[in-house]
Length: 145
Image (cartoon, rainbow, N blue to C red):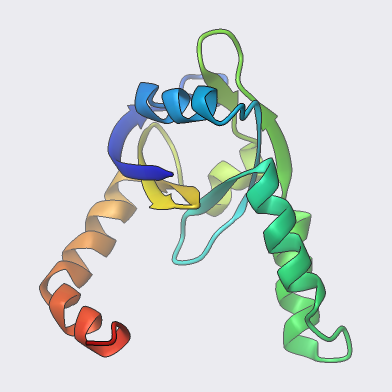
């Protein structure tokens, strides 16, 4: 559903413009709200409401008697915040999430099928630079023939 890399900036109030291609997808699928939370590898995860519910159900099944499950759920769900786009297609990213991802001004929005990842531009460039050479090796390990 969400694909591509889009470079944007955060304004002084912490607002981020959702790329027009993503807004088209939102319109096609009647999406008007998102949930953003702490992601992995130093980015933020932005889910549609429907996808967020699926994630929530998946993680709800983790045993609360296991310390790692409790820790993950606490960090993941305590970071969650509902977002709605304004008329200009902007969302307000909470400061604590911007701090978590080290987002100052320049960001990359990366479509990863069922979610959008929000990265500080430098962090995305570092991540991409680190893994682009091993992309084919990773594909061979993960994908069946």
